[in-house]
Length: 273
DNA sequence: ATGGCGCTCTCGGAGCGA
Image (cartoon, rainbow, N blue to C red):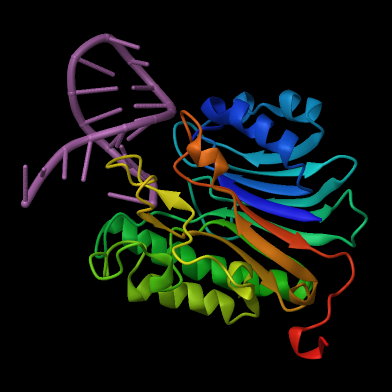
């Protein structure tokens, strides 16, 4: 089965891209970020016709997140935003997912982490507060749901391998020690960066600036991540970034990240052969 | 050196993203 995350940068604008992508890649679960629409504008009917049920949390102009599950899968115990963390911004949606593929249920958290603008700014301070609240809540979620996926636009690079120009971008937003320490603290709860469980091409990124021919020059960042719990790690068989939608006219600035999970655990590499 | 693109809200140009 397949799970994916994609920051679409306006679901209204990108709906044709999304429907095309789902037709070619009928993933079981998809987390979307930056819907940029209010709840009443969410294209639930078009997605249902494409074979997907959805839960969403939108707002005017900015942010907005959704979880999609391929029918006849289902979403239950939907949580919108972080419990106990007052936030006007629509950034988190979680659900217990029963996949269509027949795999046992998963707890899936889709998140659009704050950008942070610049170190030292008010928005950076908000990003740190938000990350503190997220981590405390994810710890509780993990205790209740060992089979957990946390995926989305993290707006944080894990390390310099995720940065096209690590020296030029040293300690700039998405690359600061504080942000990376927060991401490490999330991983320390017992989560694994699915992308780095597997050999990957060098200079693999998930976001490229619209300007300066950044995409054709592959000047990007890997800031969209899929973290999986200890219990799911033995099921992971592949994780890739699909650059194809970024090559289309009027693309999102982000590419989808796709995780493949086996229904049954796969042997650890040490036990092979 | 700066801003360079794209989206939203709204029809001029600002705010924001990353």
